[in-house]
Image 1 (cartoon, one colour):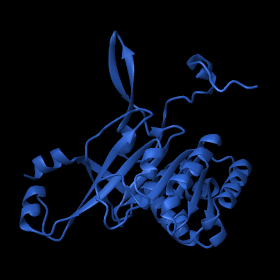
Image 2 (image 1 turned 135 degrees about the vertical axis):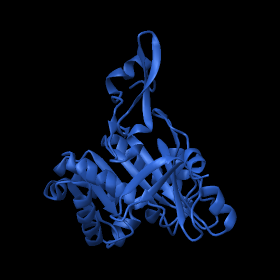
Image 3 (image 1 turned 180 degrees about the vertical axis):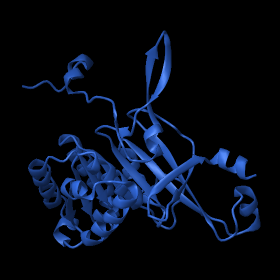
Image 4 (image 1 turned 90 degrees about the vertical axis):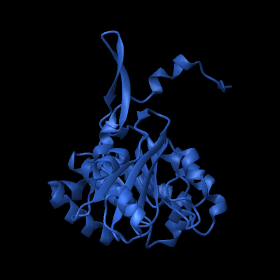
Length: 282
């Protein structure tokens, strides 16, 4: 009978290496590892999200979740790593249009990107959306055949939108699936209107945040009165966007809230910590 336990040292051969998988944004500098140099401990940027991590990206509508996921996929594909992209909300043809426009702006080789991004369109298939086993079988086939290293599911919420009571079970299934197949993953989560916009909570409660390795929360503040205009130094009617790493169990990370913008080309540009932004504007 196989032992149900292992000593910690026996896990060394199975443990993943700690390095970053680039997102193509300043997030790459916001995860770090601590190393010893000359008798003291120093922080070294990881260079991306932790390898083989599964991260939850959540936020209110139009906060930049899909923009961040697409930029991550483009960066990895342009670097020669294959990405499996599961579209649950929008038909895959729209993903192609968006990716092509962003690739040009980011200076990516779109022919290489086309070869390295593999798409499963669950938005057009009720069977893939409603039956996790069918979707995971399809994903496993794509991973085997194409040798993908990264997975994006946009959105994981769409796989349980009519049965939120099953959110924890479904998220756990896909989390374990990515671990089994050794994929670095991003799950996009949608919020319900009653949920606080600046927390990791999403549809299904905190099920996603509790199960995954970490969360990234995107938010936006509408400057709709004179007080906000004075605080943020922005005109009434404008929008302030923020991004925050809401925990990561695999490595150290910046816990501050940062200001970012979505460029005219539809890409993420992280500017500065919110505190510094307010101080400069003030």
